[in-house]
Length: 212
Image (cartoon, rainbow, N blue to C red; front, side, top):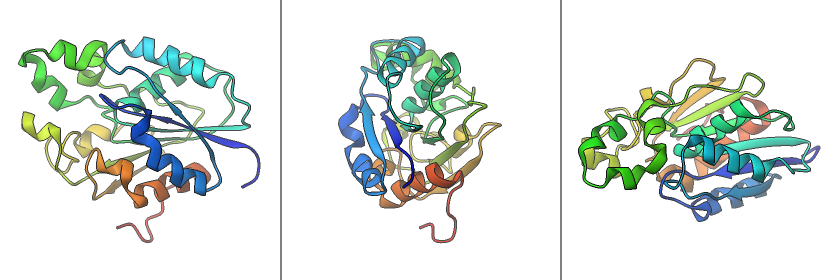
């Protein structure tokens, strides 16, 4: 691959950078340098986490800087790109990120301990974040296999991945949107998702010729 491309992987709620290890390995095999950002998901709000991500990426030496972000991590990535400028050009792939807000998060308001469970990201999860970067092509991969923790709260509706509904992943300005038969967590371990992430970051579109 020409140039010096780098991908930053950003994990979702209650996870750590370890959750992105398999995806990282597959993207490295595609010729990308990969770094995994880690943050304490419930210990700050969107602005806090976006600032932490900025500190992590601002010193990059890459001439192309891409992002592949899962669930809440997608909202953090968008928050950082909206607030900051001056990074190398690149693309963004979001995976199961509730851009339009999460009905599962809204239904959890009355649960005991929900403030601790969702932390400062609760308002963002409830209402979403649709500020897509105007200078970066952004693609979304959504899941349609409805199995996950979200089902304990009545699910997000179908089609969906068990935690986030497909309709919650839609927003004006997305360059491409692809639905695959994966669960919310399972998409991180899917070979097809990894292939589609790499393809979008290289070309700006998903490959629909052989999706499973």
